[in-house]
Image 1 (cartoon, rainbow, N blue to C red):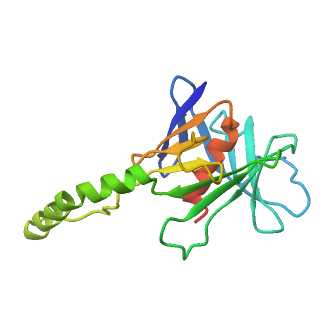
Image 2 (cartoon, helix red, strand yellow; image 1 turned 90 degrees about the vertical axis):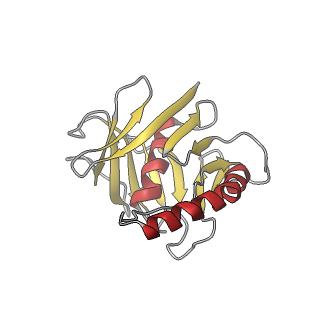
Length: 191
């Protein structure tokens, strides 16, 4: 079964909204009274309720500087590795699962890069039109998507994908939904 969800970053309430299910609430830090493993610093919690009393997973920073996704009973679900902040061209995001599987996601799949090249003349015309008019330019980026796949498989099925609009899709048979939620939040919060 495929899980599809979107990010909704509000200043007060950061949520992930899966299609056909209750929202997953994201809170900074660990829930009150939650004991962390030794050497771990809390980053954020994925919870079923806004108060964070029923955590689905807790993401912590380990001694090595990596992000670990833990269940409420401290079971290790995955390790998230984010690219360095200075990396500009096609940064790589990695998910290391406990069974030794590595999923690597690079911003900009081949189809999205080709689409960007095809649309580039229209974007340039749009930019010239904005420069001539009095409309302010918000942040305009390239229409890229990210796909997390096993290394070496250029055209294989992706375990997790993010569209240019911020929609995520995770294949249920290859990736735990809590790890997909954690990667979606970590990509934007931890940079």
